[in-house]
Image (cartoon, rainbow, N blue to C red; front, side):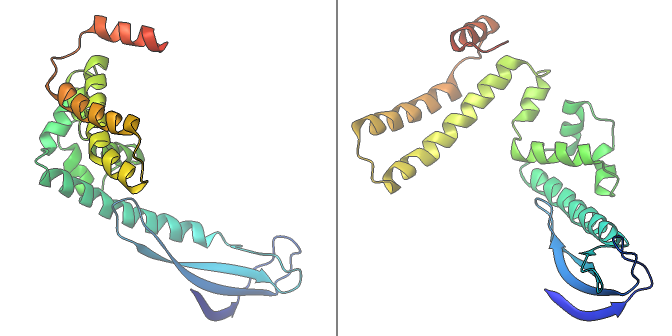
Length: 208
């Protein structure tokens, strides 16, 4: 949305040094993942002599930074609240990831870094990563959780996708059955050992 407010500012164009500058304002908003939208009032300066346009005083950077800070803080609170609603204890997160005590309490108070915010988003998106961290990031445990989560997703969404595409191929039907059976097998299978994992990587040509 463009504001019709026009003002004449006492600064010069960075291209032609003219002080004949017109300023207009527009409203936008910034929304962090899981955060609330925060409005921003952005300025556009236009030189009436050469036509150069932009933010000549770098005011928009501060407005954007402030909006990002507010929206991300709301996201931190929403992410933590959602994790707690899933019975994931904050002390468990700190203990599992080796974070100092009261780290999450400080996050709730607004004392969080960009890396802390990213870590929180990863935990929220993939909460099973905490079980991998609990195993000291054992690749075997990581692979088993990855297989379990992948087969859950396939068994949940693949049948509806096939149906929506009108696919009646016996091969697809067999694939759906295989995925469903595999999902149950992986969930109930005994833990893999490192020899099994090494053989798997050897067969696929992946490094380990």
